[in-house]
Image (cartoon, rainbow, N blue to C red; front, side):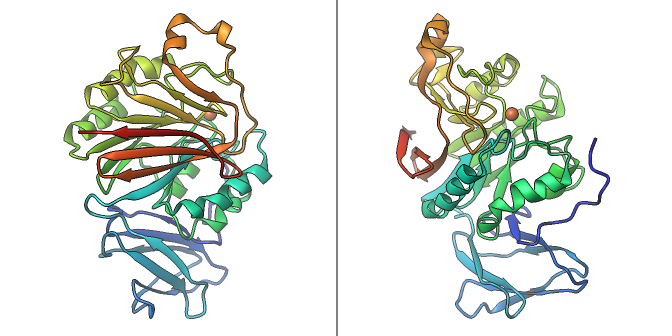
Length: 357
Ligand SMILES: [Fe+2]
């Protein structure tokens, strides 16, 4: 059951977007005293812009009218710590993001922190999570202790963009922190020349459902050069943690194929697994969708299924399968997309380069 205690924001600020990542940023945090704060911010050294926060202990400050592709700095109050963030470029300008998931189930906090410490070195515009941020998302204390406390070194600098996983709870706390309250748990946004679609494999996605219609409508209208999907349960996997989700494969993969999705990122399996490009269940280097399970964020690892136990079809589409803690740094430079998987020491464990016409 969801916690009866009223949720509060963490003490350290965390970032998300109000609407457009190119021109807005949302800063949320809680303060001990009931008062309004002055937020000093700007893209110049003297932080020449300011905004008064709402009154109370739960603060939500929405900065808008920002310049695309620009580094900003901000502080909360005259003597507050100086933080920074970067807005999305409006046009085709190179950018990076970090993506991975599965932090907590039987988790290793030391590994999780070691991965967190590496992330700023990638200079990501934001951090995407493939779900299962916490072991039980209905528990308020777990969000505070196992997600916001460890991620507190990153959250004031990089927008946190999670996908909902099966451990992330019934949705009220997840939505309180990462969506507008009561809103659906799926979402999308455009960042430079890439369209990101965050699906929720724990909600209904059957044909005709609101989520299904949202996916089709979003892809039909997308004019972005790159189309990237993030969801929790992988449709193609050969890991002993969980099998391929065949419903996701049957219902959603034909949509991904029809509308030219380039990569589908998932979590759920605590491993790194990348398929060959797949179209209609067969390897198709020209028209296929690549599926990457990136669930090595700190949870206890799952091994791959032994090769002898794979079906003939699986043997064809498997590519890289590693039982390893890791994160992905993805760089998009116009028509080239590079996925670099790194372990907790920063060593490269896989690299994928995709180009489009
Ligand atoms: Fe999961």
